[in-house]
Length: 432
Image (tube, rainbow, N blue to C red; front, side, top):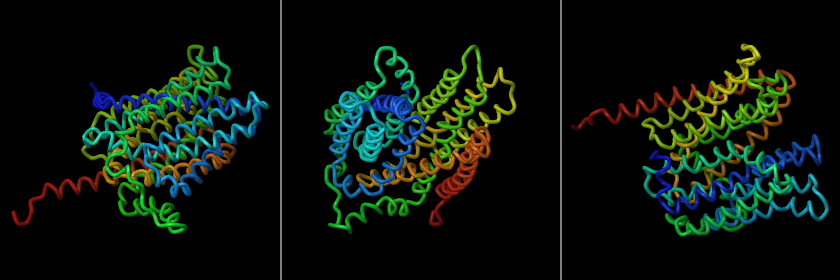
């Protein structure tokens, strides 16, 4: 059995992972359905549904810590799943009472995005408790991270199947059911989620002083552990160009150049490229979760080398190759880009859980999510300018080159640092 799947021998891990799979696929259904419904209701204003999510994550992440840090992780996760189900159902209830509106879709998206800032940091803080053996932490991080990558791969296919017999509005009902199942799974396994001091609330000063402590706790922790702090911030910032390259530029390229292969074109062509990215994503996750890297930091940045190279090659293929082979070439580039992501994320999360402990893990991870949301918000705003001035292909190439440059720079820097550390450990002590 591959190392990434070994934690599933533990019944508690099985239960939590199964619930997580259900809710992440449900969240992907919500993503597909909310955009589709928003386009039907509001046309060009549909972009608000996506944009407000980043704003909600920023606000909740920055100012919600004073509340979130006082909650036990198991209660925070179970409660957030219950409220997420309620927010997912809000547009459904409105649909039957007064008809669907863009306002309800925005409120639902804001609620789910804000609750993600409760759930995700709490989940990260419980993983070392769920699997105390540090040798298995990278495997379980790969396993849990795979749920999001699998959802990205199979979510659109599940949506296509459900659309055959279910109205799009009830995709949101399916999302709510996924949240309820996930919350119940966490409730069943709750006794395994509160060890290592996580059952004790964080002690904070009263009033504004406590609020300030909660706001700045993540920054202080990252400054104290500068190496992993730098890596977390780098990852969060690069989510901006990653989002533009994957979510926006590829769709515009296919719309503009209309590549076809073996009868597949338009939306089917887009699905093939995104599917190739998903296959690379899941495959990279299995490898990254199964292998323990001797030099984790420099290896992480090789993941960005692969991702940046894949996105860049995808753009170059549009300019350099004839139309009859363009779509397969774009799929190869997307596959390579997908392979790179897990090689950075899985070791990064494992190192974070090793360096930080207990509630500090949640505080640091929440700050990463805040920076990520800000980067994606800013990138989505300025991407329009780049698309207008440079075009979709040049923007895609630029995003790929930025990621590639960071990957090469980070690999060289951390490779030298790790080599120096290895040489220092191998050198004989002067007293010997």
